[in-house]
Image (cartoon, rainbow, N blue to C red; front, side, top):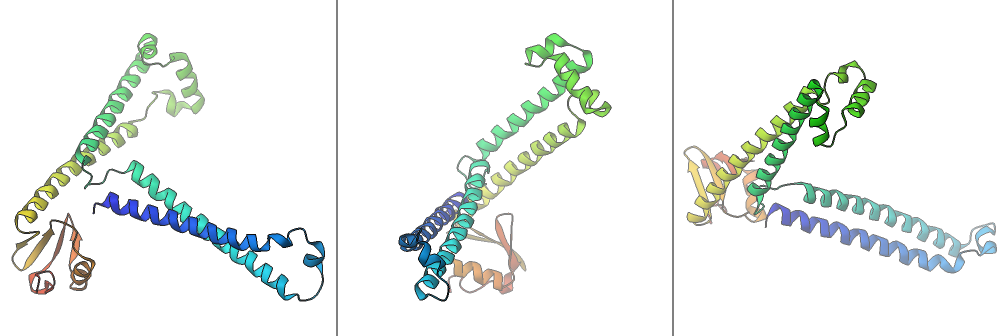
Length: 240
C-alpha cells in the first residue's frame, strides 16, 4: 500500500469517526427534545432524577460534538495534505515534480523580467505582462523606500532557486530508491547489502511484526532502507 493510499484510509476513518460522534450526539439530544420548552420541568427547584439524566445526556452530547469537530479538523488536514503533496511512491511522482520545477522556473523568469522592465521604466513591456507601470510604482512607493527599487526582492529568487534544486535532488532520490526496490523485487522481495553494517531493502512494506522487530533490534529507517548491524537482524526478517 502506498503512502497516499494509507493516508486515504486514515482520512476515511476520521470521517467515519466524525459521523459516528455526530450521530451519537444527535441521538442523545433527540431523547431530550420532549423536555425542550418545558419550563416547570427545567426550573422546578430540588433534585429531579430525570432532569439530572437530561443534563447528563446533554453534556455527553456536547462531548461527542467536540470529538466530531476534532476528527473533522483532522480529516480536513489530511485532505489538504493529499491535495498538495507529491509522495515519492506516487505513480506520477517524477512527472509531477518536473511540472512543479517548470512552474517555479517560469515564476523565476517572470520575476527577473518584471524587475528588469520596471528598472528600465518600460511601460509597454510591463503592459504586455498585464502590469500597469504607474500603478505598480505607486504601490511600491507606498510600501517604503526599500520596496521602491524593484517589485520583487532578491530573496524571492533565492527561494525559488532553492525549491528547484530541492526538487531536482528529490527526483534523483526517487530514481535511486526505485532502482533499489527493483533490485529487491529481483532478489525475491528483500535485498541486504553491506558487511557488518547492513542495509535492508524491502520490495514492499513488510508486516508490522517485522517492522517492530527491526526497531527493537536497533535498526533505523532512512533513504528507503533499514540500517543496522548484521548480527542483530531479527530471525523473522530472514524468514526463520
